[in-house]
Image (spheres, rainbow, N blue to C red):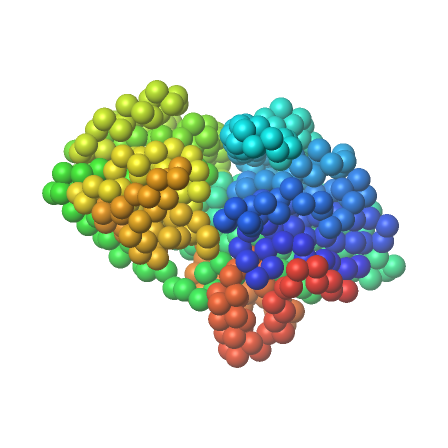
Length: 462
């Protein structure tokens, strides 16, 4: 038995872990590498293993840094099942097809440039149709359902509280009469977050593979977070500008709609026109409404009373490009929720082009921004940004709402690990070096844990 780390090592994106048990090989995660052009270019590299030799894939949740290379894996020869929570199956149908569409558009734009220069044309990483075909290999599992996926490999999913259907993966591995329990945290949710339950606690493991995204940060309290968000909305109203919110289409978008509904009166949301300007976000919101059974008690009760989820009376769904372009005529009074969450593409960049140079406007950052992304540049105080080759001034006020996070903070991560009996060895992944190092120090010094910070292609014998 062994595990190898092929992604999210000393960085956040590209999660991919290969496990070998007897004659079987399977993956946990197969995610996209995200960030600047140089990083994302590695998505088309050959896999560091033979896709045809993989027997199964287990997926923790639908975010593309965990799921986004699955269609490519299948395109290159993988023919087995992808096991994940039923809600994740539905979300991946939306997200992977959208990723295929973006791949097609990016290849089309790049090939126009290459044609003019007489260079060799490229193919999309994968297409919409290839994403649809890949989705046929997904198999849904409920939380708490034990499933033997391969000889000597049993899996059970626990609620991670990160996005709809997100899971902690418990693996029971048996080879030559020896059994080992390996737990993958996936992305752990932020305790007390709207809509979803808190991450489940697990008591026993021989090895824990744990994310460390916010291993060096503490979130503000929820009360402070709501107060800050309300103040931003109030300030923007007095400035007579628009609010642009780059939001991850799965998870963050639905949380925002839910919170706007809960604070409709005290934040004066009724004084605004709210635009959900992301076709994928609209579809993902429908999926959320179809899986209210995994909501926390408050959100579930709210849904059962109304039988409608995310029902703001002043909410406009912008399906088409024409709908999106109409928003740009509005100079004041619009709250615009648009993808992408890290501002690397999507409709948010078009709204920046029309608004970010206007000092009466506001940008509300409500999610993690990886190094090398436009969103990270804004958080770090960029005074100019580049939009399609044009340098644009940043005059809008940029607000980082740090408490509204789908990830556990440092204390949340420490508290989750502290529930394991006997302090099993822990391998940290899914974090930038500073975050990973800081979290490792706390685990070692306070809980006396044996901590490994995973390196790319590192192999551990179980």
